[in-house]
Length: 462
Image (cartoon, rainbow, N blue to C red; front, side, top):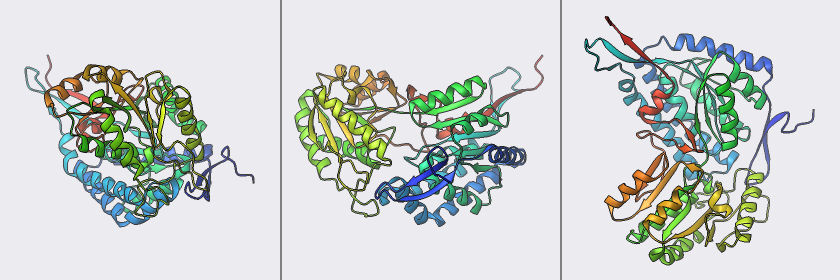
């Protein structure tokens, strides 16, 4: 049998080009079986009490820690994340289980209301089985930050993972099995686009959550809308990183390098457009370029390396094409900008200067280790530049003037603003975007409530 992307999901080690595994796409019978299991699993799971479900979250965390190194190595092997960052992803995911186990039950308690007879409450009921379509860039964390609150709320979770991280998908499923999560409460299958369409239409799927590209989110969102099903979309970003003249320069540069080059630049909510007030621009640029040049890139299994390969060869080619277009449009190359020779899918830390709003690196998401520097005349101009984007995921402001920072935050068109620090998703705060970065929220109580049937129960209303 000929194996092609049309017939199989193919996992390739991006550091070597070695084929790791192949898995045939799920057929109609596979999908029907998964949906039957999900429906049966949800019927039983919704009847369990919240304390039991919270304890099972702790079991998931324990099971994940027991396979911590195995999971980290799988992440590194399949998508090229530097091993220390992969280990941190596993630890963060396990901690998420504990956090929701501790705080989630209180978030699902009935809420009192202000009706006159004090006999109305808001209840958070299970919704059903949630279809999750997840990406490769955080192959564990992206799954866990949705699955954990969804399952705690009494729902089922059915995963369709990115085809290049099937090993991660299989290992995550094993973790849930190790933790004693019943079959059908957590499930996964290797569905292609037609399979996803079939599942969205099926009445046994209650809602959909997607993390991915704008194109994928728009297509799936349209299908969910046609089926009258709720969806949460966490899509692309081209986050502004604003540095004003009075900023702590050393702190700003450190955060800028971490925010742009973590995960080899393959992060949706990450600094991409560096908008620097002109009085500090030269000093910031000099230090930023030096710090980026000092980053070590290479075999992601080597703990000394801060950057690994990009996850797929086509993504590297696309990124390089964006860089070339931006340079042709008049930007200046300060660092990197060339595909590395050899078997691995490596692209060096790259810095583009003199980037203006009409250029590709400003208008499009640069999903890789490329920073675009734009100079702002003043704080008002920086704000104008920051909002001049079709994306609205997160933003960063570096300044010692907290009053000004908070005033600017109120006017930034995005889902999260980070003052004197760079963006990171955290269980304790809501995560999501506006504009073409999507809608809905993950994490915190907002993410927990997204996939609940928020039910009014009112006694003696006459």
